[in-house]
Length: 86
Image 1 (cartoon, helix red, strand yellow):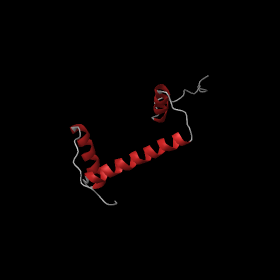
Image 2 (cartoon, rainbow, N blue to C red):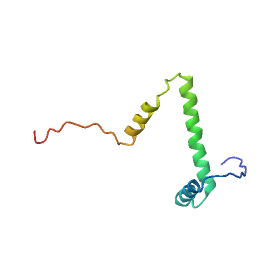
Image 3 (tube, rainbow, N blue to C red):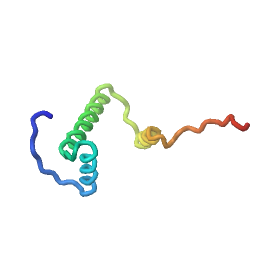
Image 4 (tube, one colour):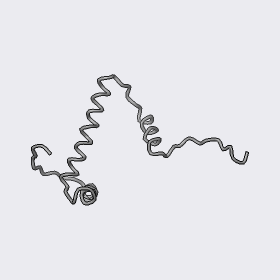
């Protein structure tokens, strides 16, 4: 970690519980490490957005994005024709 700053934040209780659970599971209870991990993820997401703007990538409609996310999750696997028992 580079130079650090101590901050005070307000967060919903359910979100804090989730962050603390992750901190215990992955970082020996270090909540700051979870915040750092999340911040790094957001930094990469911002960099991706900047890149997509620079290359003038088309913006997806909400329904297109939803379809992609569903496919990524494996919920919309295309049905294959069954050749067994035909």
